[in-house]
Image (cartoon, rainbow over all chains, first blue to last red; front, side, top):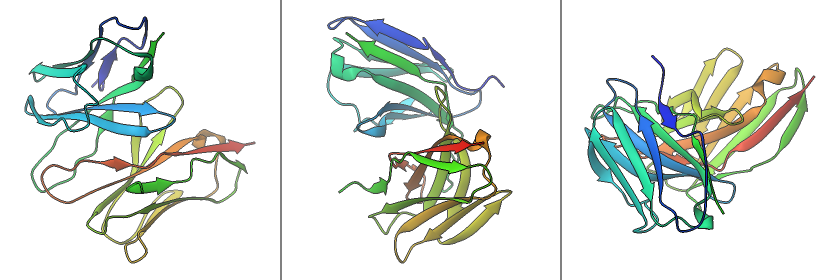
Length: 116
Length: 112
């Protein structure tokens, strides 16, 4: 298996532009997570999907952020409009989550976002 | 107060040293405890996983949880330059949806 695939690896954009990050989870996994990592705040959960349905979006910073999972093999995280404080590494992770268990997360290699 | 506190380091040790990495947490309801390793420009990968209190050993790595003091430790014996990475502790509650709470990560450098 190729693991969790994220694209692009790097994104440089100007303030006010729309940014779309993409993620392909591991085949067969039913849970997908978007995380953001910064030096100041560490690794923060933005949103969690289970069976393509958003379950917990309490970590989404504000309305400028939105995430979708149209099918089991694809998810997007969109920022519109982007701001310099959104600069961070964004990770997608997936797992096979079963009720009552704690399955490990498999992370992608991340998207380094720089908003100028 | 953060739910999981971890000294960001950096920690620099010579090859062969025993490394001790630590975290503290505030919520006594946490049941699962994990250590993730993150190499530069890569995503975190699960290294060790324990449930409730006790020790778990895997090769050169030992994870220890002391729920009475809310303290999590990772020991690395005979450290190698390939162990140079950032180590993140993480905790979660038991149950169906296990939202992981991560520490800030400790950057470790093992020099030859």
